[in-house]
Length: 174
Image (cartoon, rainbow, N blue to C red):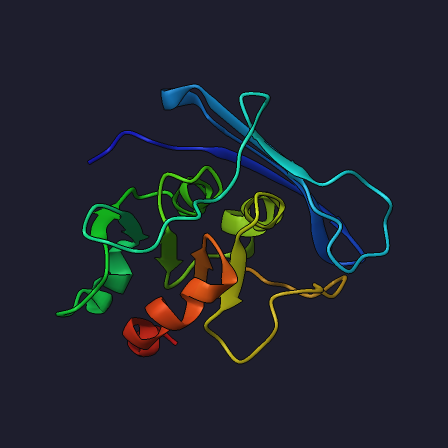
């Protein structure tokens, strides 16, 4: 496999991530991002990789572009899928490749809140869109509630207009 692992830290305000930091030591990459969203906070917005600004890709899907999967979401590999498929093995890093513009999208079938809270803020700060494939909203989290056994099937894409391009392939994941 690809020897990637990461340390992930998300700062939540009223149950919703507003800052994320992820460090992937094997590749010496440090991501961070600020995203106020609908929090009402007056904070800067931006996403960074090793202190350099990053942005999602504006490219249209093609056979020259990548889309990341987790090992439990291989059912999306169907005729007509618009990109090349890759599996990285780390949910947070999977989504951060969207933030950095390296991939057009990524999907995870069973990530836990600690797998993506930091990446959630970074992806959106970079210009991406985050879509829950579950009927329940991701955020805000409720203080005192145990989220240890809850999975959050998730799609992250480089921009909102790609959701209808990829979502038809993801019906089996929800």
